[in-house]
Length: 254
Length: 229
Image (cartoon, rainbow over all chains, first blue to last red; front, side):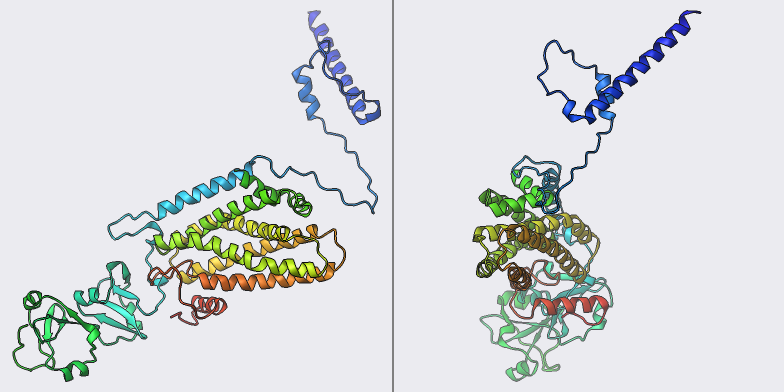
């Protein structure tokens, strides 16, 4: 029973000694001239116990205010050397750049046979800029239109589509009714001719329509640049449609 | 990575950086580092811009955006140098070049930081006009911050010479205006950077119109006043 009070007393003494040591150290810190010069550690000087070091670090540094003359030049701030190695901001920049590079590659990889990428996958009718050459097809419609001179013109056949140099990549799918907002112009036809025949035919919905004479050709607004040369066999294989103008008799075969 | 460390110094410790430019310390190393970093950052941002259209536009914008800024730098540097020289500056052309390159590098870093936001809008919106105006906004903010860096740098670098300081300051402000106009016209000349979704890929579009009229038309279309045709 006598041991308990003596151990408590010992604990109290230990705490008191620690507190005194701390105060002495704080006082010696706040009086720089008294502080002895720093000497290299000797073998005789035992290393301080780790617990003490932690407590010392926890203590706040005394604030010493340095008064500067107003006319003195402003001191240069504490500066990092320019050529030091990369720190976290530099690493962040590097990682961000690398991440972006990976993202750019990923969003540009085509994921279907039409070459659609993630970057261009958004429905784009809202994004369309209506300019000459814009090719559109309404979602549920089959007809393809091209915008020329403030009008949308129907491209009357696949041959015409190819003849005018369009590709499926040019076709923008738009919502139904999109074309109602625009004026619809005359259809865009392709004229077919083979070398061994003088006749010219206009292709419409897969049928060839014989154009009776040059006057009709010009009256329909066609130009020689619209004429596409194909093989006579191909031309003969196309079904006949109504002549131009209608009722001009049975169409001659190429 | 050393290039990025130097760029970080520009952002963190600019007074020291500008003081070193004033003293002419390591100008070659600084220029190299900033060129490498800004070209890489501009290329990445340009690639994100062009991704809305096609792979060719992605590659084209990745090349054209660094060219835009560096060409503007080359075109505008001599003006600033000679005007400063007339009004008593003792800076060399290389010092002027490094200072402007610092502003451009800051712009490039900010564009890089905006790139994820741009990528987000690229994947979630489809309005071309909105995307274009978003880019104009990002470039404006980044450019203004870059120019602020330039003016701070000018003040520190030319701190030594008191003669004609007021005139030099006026020259810098005027030069910033010229720089803005040259930059916007250069951008108009090198367009497209985004590529209108309804048009085929073009490396350069035919000249005509101007940057400002196009931006006003885009704002008009977004607000529903006009249709850009």
